[in-house]
Image: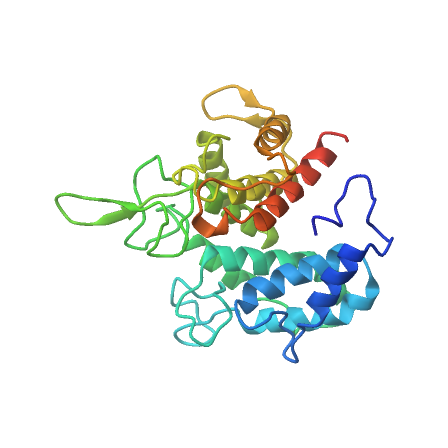
Length: 318
């Protein structure tokens, strides 16, 4: 995806060896059930491979992407009584394994993203789409991860205004931890930055209207907690994933200058582009000093940075 997004178009349509090897690798791991992976993480890997195949803009991959859509729709969770949204995990995605016990925001974001961008491949199919998702159920899961007492009645939901509107990893778990009430022992889970941008993105992919209270609440949380110095609530952990989800969410939302809750505006595109340029290492790569979520791995983090810079470049009129 990063190579396909080269702003100077030095790669697109020119059968560069790097791209050819990459696509050969992906195609060699297409499974009969439609998933695209080696041995593990089928939800993650199928979704990102779908996005890579879409980035090629080559119709020869359409049948593979359609079958991958069928795989993802088949692993959308429906725990409890089938057909009913009776658990907070219904409608979301886990790792795509039979052993999944929960859905999580990270797998769900990638699955919704791949399904959203590949919708055009089903436009000519009459009637209900067998390879589509239950989007209403997806919104149910997302809502169940949001710190918003008006819409989420789970016991962990925080009533602290500092958390209102933000997201956690999945119902009952926040990677930012929680606050325990000394009197009752109740634990209120904290919202954090990267997964709150993932929540906004997921709501957009699921076609939740932007004036919906749930969408408005997460936008307000993100405005209040805007910073490029850390992943809010997580410090340096997941910093480049935070930059990546921020760029995608604000780009698809068509946000120019970001109106801050504290008054004033942020030229977020220019500021983030400069931040990423400053963080580039001498060999051209990027890596996080914090190892959580593989962010000391330069191949992964360089892709996060490149994908972000490509969107920023286009948004700045490059």
